Image 1: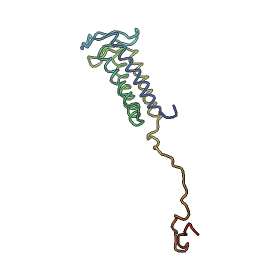
Image 2 (image 1 turned 180 degrees about the vertical axis):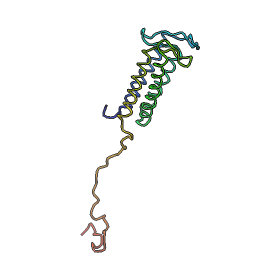
Image 3 (image 1 turned 30 degrees about the horizontal axis):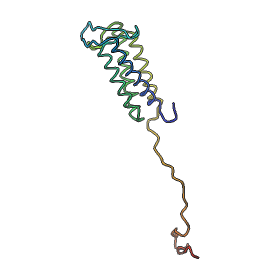
Image 4 (image 1 turned 90 degrees about the horizontal axis):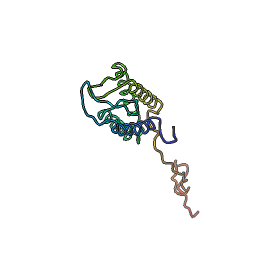
Length: 166
């Protein structure tokens, strides 16, 4: 953790940037917006199955992370929310199996599901490791004592205010 950033802010920044980059990179492998059971797929770096829909999902979820990064509360919501969503997607992917299509749009393979699980666990961990509320913003002001001749007596027994000329 850096001095000024919480774990969930770092998660939102790093995962957001990686997902946007992966989504853009994916368009160099597949630009197909076909749907159905026989969705065309290409493997980014020979590992992760993608198509244009999958690339758009990565760009959108990454952009949300980059937008959430600036504020601790929004970064925490992103980390916990997307951690939960990616956990469901990972489990769903493991249930469907290798080489299947999710929602008749998104090609997935086991490697995708493992990556989604890692993203989910990192998000949930970052959200859990971060404070629930941000530290309040406090401006420290130096203490400047009030001159004694400007003070009012706190009780009648102390007498009247003294003149500075005495």
